[in-house]
Length: 483
Image (cartoon, rainbow, N blue to C red; front, side):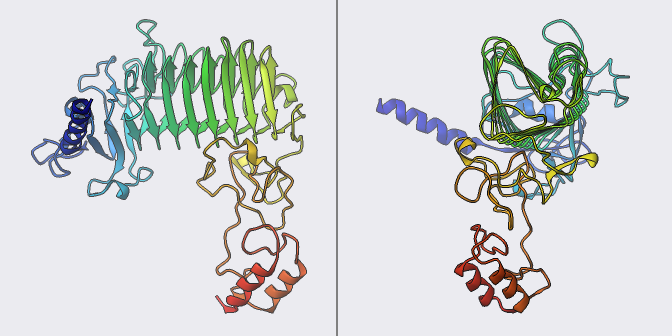
C-alpha cells in the first residue's frame, strides 16, 4: 500500500516537474519554431496541430490571435483533438508572460474548418473539416479556453461525420470548454455546434450562434449525456427539430444563467429553444431566459415529449412563438412529457408554484437586450431556495447575483437579497461615494432628507440590506461633503 502511494506521488511530482508551456503563433516567420517561447513559437496555420502532437498531460498551449486549421493539406477528417491534462488557451497578443494577461475577446483566435477561407453561408463549404474539435475520450482536465470555433461541416453520412460540426464528443469523454464562441458550423444529422453522445461536457461563458443542425439541434444534439452549460448564450441557431438544443435519451443536462434567443425549429417536432424526449431525458434550467424563439409547428420555447422532463426554476419564457402566436403552449409545451415550472414568468401563464404571467419588461428586446428594466416585476421576485447547490455568484453578464434593488419590494421567496428571475440580475451602479443618494456628487442635506423620508423602507437604502436604518445614517454622515 505504501509503495503504491509512493509511486503515485512520484508520478504526480514527475508530471508537475515536466509540465511545459508550448507557444503557437500563426504569423511568426522567425525563430527556431520549437514552441519553447513566443520568439520560437510553432509557426503557420497548422501550428496548433504541431503543438498537440508533442504535448503531454500537465502542459499548456498558448495560442496567439489568428486563424488555425486542423490540417496543412485540407484533410476533411482532421480535427483539433483535445487531450486529458492538456489546457489549450487562445486570446494572446504574443507578448504575455502570464496567462492572466491575455484578452481573448480582443485577440480573436479562430479554430476554423474552412480550409480555403471562402465560406459564404452554406455555400463553398464542401471542402470544410467534418469536425473542428474532437473531445472524445478526453477527461475534464482537457481544457479549451478562449477560441472562436467555426466552419465545421459534418455532411457525410458515414462514421458519424454527419454530426457535430463544431465539436464532437462520442462514447466517452468529459472535456471542459470556456470562453468560446461556436458560430457558422453545420451538419446534416444533428448538432451544428456540437454533438455529445454517451459522454459529458462542461461549457462555461460560451456563445453558440448561427449554427445549422440539419435534422436535430441547431447548436447541440445530445444523447445519453450529463452536461452543464453555465452563463451561455444560444442565439440564431436552426434545425428541423430543436432549434438550439435536442436532449435525447437518458441523462441530465443543466443550464444556469443562460439565454436562448432567436433560435428556430423549422419542421415537425418543434422546440425552438430545447426539445426533450425519450428514455428519461432530464433538463434542469435555473435562472434562464427563453425569448423570441420561433417554431413552425410546436413550442417556440421548450417542447417536452414522451419520456422527457423539464425542471425550470426562476426562469423567464416570453415572446416565443409558433402556431397561434405567443401562447402559453408556445412557451412551454408538455407533448407527452413532464414539466415542473416554478417561480418562473411564463407568457400566457403556467401552472406551478410562484409563477407569473406579467410582462418581464426587458430593457430592450427589440434591440436584443434581454436585461431587466428598472420597472421589471422579475426583480427581487425569484426563489432563493431554487438556486442550485453551490449557488450562482454572477449572472450572464458577470454582475453579482442577489442584488437588493433600492426601492423595489421583495416579492420573491427567501431572505433579502432575493434573486431576480431570468439570466440577468438588475444591478444599480454604486454612486460616486456612499451616501450620495441623489448622485449629485455631494453628500448633503438633500441626501439626508431622502434617507429620513424613506426610513424603515427600501427607498434610499445605502448598504443594500433592504431597509433604511441606523447603519445607512452612519454611512451618510461619515461621508458628509463633496465626493
